Length: 205
Image 1 (cartoon, rainbow, N blue to C red):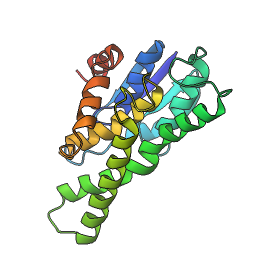
Image 2 (tube, rainbow, N blue to C red):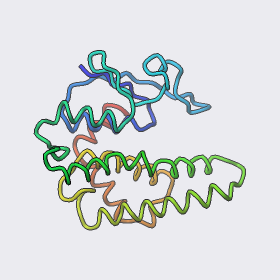
Image 3 (cartoon, one colour):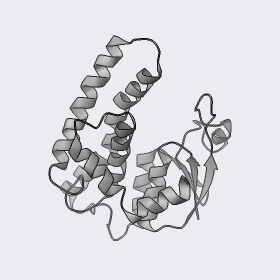
């Protein structure tokens, strides 16, 4: 059985969501952040040297990094290609892979910079300019890709939506979504999915 090492208040809730979408049996090992520093506890380093989450243990196979975990879970548990196109459709698979890795590979950094700036008491004009420009660039790009579609790659929900929803939800928490109403509607739509609601019930509440 898969064990997901789940850090409360963090991105691993989205791995819980993916497991629920796949219908995979799993158990949670829950970790709590330090209330003063909001850092992960040192005990997570016993699972992976970086002490980050999510990390899964699948019968002794330890896998870290959200996109790597997603790829592994799809390879093992999505034989019917419900959440990703088959590799035989190379163009569709390449587009899916790009959007799977894009949120954390490109969008997360300017959002992280913005979050740290909001917590800082000192002005940082260079970083402010960087984060504002990059956030607008990326969220305009995401909104254009979404267009009038239900999901990020069209009419069907895929595992790429899990990652995109992660960065869109982060932007919402930072109060940055007012300029992109379609993305607010998109987030509400994907977070109304039964699998997401089950994930929140199990891993948050």
